Image (cartoon, rainbow, N blue to C red; front, top):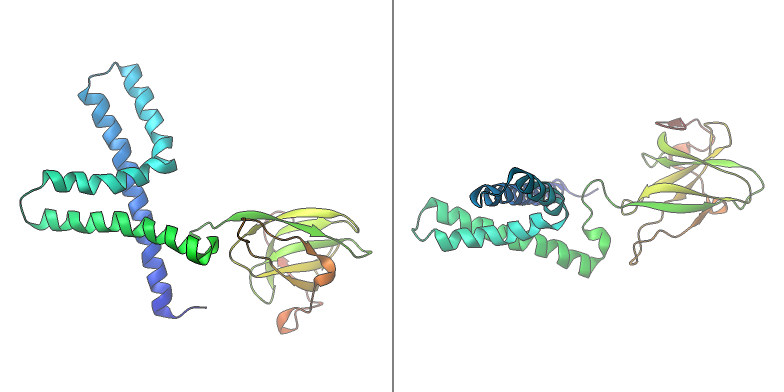
Length: 222
């Protein structure tokens, strides 16, 4: 776990980033509505234009709008004052936040920028033992609680969704039970955005004496 100031800084960064996303998306949609009304298009054409602006705003248009809008407003607002100072702040945020995300991804890898819900990837599990098992995604290091229950037959493969950057623990349960047999360290996303396959035989003892104890499995399969 990080220090309290570090966690607070990360939270503030994501709050600012999502605020930028919301402002950019809403601003682009509002600009589309204003443009359609100003040009006095027929109602059907106006509706199509606005409907098309919605997915564009959420895919990438929000970033374009957020980057361009503060600078356009600065050109229009020549008089010094609070509004111009706020526009300087908005312009700086619109450049620094996305640039920081890109720079972090390039320098430290894709997991350096991992906003919720994270990178939802799929891990391949090979049961290389003679017995069928059930694999779960542990919610803590002890694996007292888990989710995403996935059955794997002996000698077969199965796939299970994982959050690719979080790391953590996978629990191996005896088939048809909630008894914890072993734990496997979750793989993390590589530079190509993939998770390496895992095998049941690489399991190890679980922390805090949880091996042999019952696990509370939440959600489907629990």
